[in-house]
Length: 116
Image 1 (cartoon, rainbow, N blue to C red):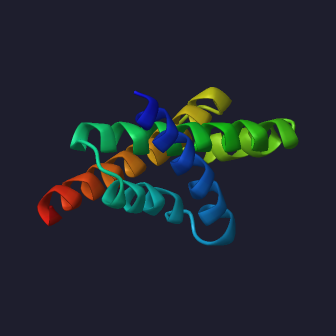
Image 2 (cartoon, rainbow, N blue to C red):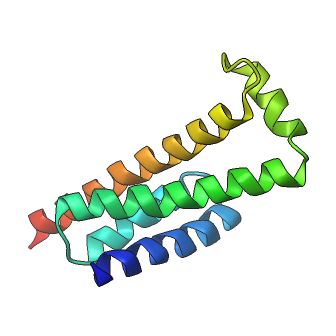
């Protein structure tokens, strides 16, 4: 359990740095790389990627919503069929990042098991 929490924090921290310096999918790729080099089960790989990047994207979406007083979030929610719901857009944003990173983490763990 301690290793999983450490892996989640490491994925979130390195994912934030990678996304800040590069493209959006650099964060999920950090989940793949960390699970490729850090021993663990495939389920643990999915969970660590899902929670690490999911919580990161949730925090970034909430920060952006707060910084723009909700104006940007409402306008983006109107573009999608979300009826202008800020909560739905923030939740969808976090889920997309979490699921993408979870699949990348799972892939990294499976590639490690093939390599070993």
